Image (cartoon, rainbow, N blue to C red; front, side):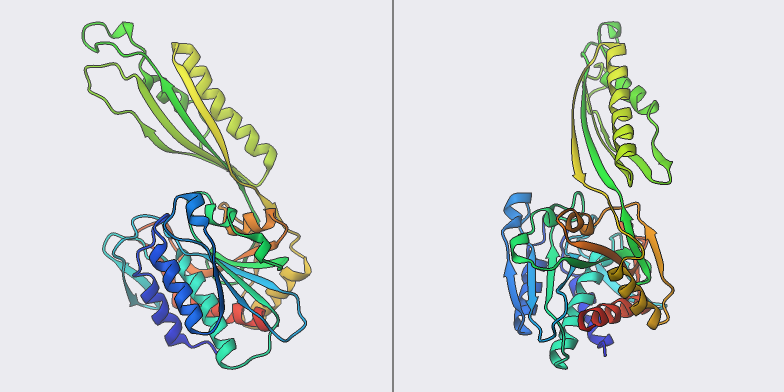
Length: 368
């Protein structure tokens, strides 16, 4: 029943609307208009003011006649960089992007799949229970749109988030928590040729700290990475300041604390060794979740996938999504694959077959 042409056409159109994180105004307004034009009840909040975005979270409410439990469907509207001037094209069963941009399937594939399922139900007058939808801003970089969802507007206690790679059968039942470390090493400037021994090189201190850190894959549940290492200055002055932004993730809260403390300890030890000053703060970006793979709700979704010939895998993820925030707020949430591949790179692509399938699965869950 999914209108495959409309699904693909809408996706191709939406990804051409620039919507890098904190610049979601155009896409959020377009989605709200499209939903209203189709006769849905729409609410737009003021989350943008709270997170520094020019867009806002968009909510859609579709009241039904069936006495079934309300389910929330969610996807995010923002994209990572470089996401300006995206030119999508179809090749060998995939949607790809021309030039040096991402595609934006993360997560407009999820957005469009949800909207198409809603449209099919409405235009075919299919009986359904109450459906709630949230399209969030600023998911990339901290799930900040979801953190500012007006939960008083929602009654659902279960949610489907469409924001993962692979097909619909990849059901994310575990996801990590994340911390972010912002550190500034303050050294002492001096003339690099005349009296370098009088200075304290912030670059040297920070570099030693990073060298001593355990990074990248720590274990099957834990990762860590340095995202920014910045020190700008002339070569004839011993560097006075170096800044680092780093992250740690783990599906184990205990392991996350151990890794975060380890990275801070490396910074402290190197700073103390050379007499540099260290300023830092740690941000808790989001919390982990772990659901019972045999949960009734998860089994229902798995059975819908199996009925469509999709192999089901109930798997952990190394990344966070809005599902982390919903679970933290008492809404049992799982994340499903939409067919996107190689996300956050300029090689990103979307498998059209899997994209159609997740739209069908979303429809089946809505009318179950």
